[in-house]
Length: 131
Image (cartoon, rainbow, N blue to C red; front, side):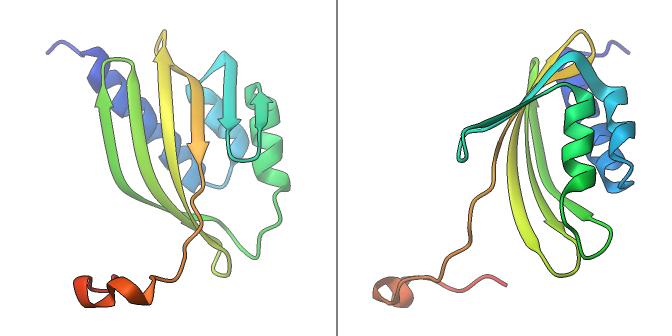
């Protein structure tokens, strides 16, 4: 069976989240390219290199081990997108991550961390609340 670039992108993103779930953030470098970049457009931050990425995750204040729930991964060619929930048992967040793959490694991630908000009353009659 031939592995397509789409299959490879999906596989690398699946591996990325499996390694993140180990909470050994330095192990994630196995799937990151030497010139890896992570961008957070909402805060205007850029992290260069797998080591800085690992240190940032290891130094982030947590109440326990991080648990990652992958809701969806979509891939096409050298691009993939994941929708993942993250919690340490106290903090809860959701990340939408856009991956670029090159030479069988993740070269770039552009990541968005949307904040939850209370649904407005004016559309209550049109919606149902998700739990």
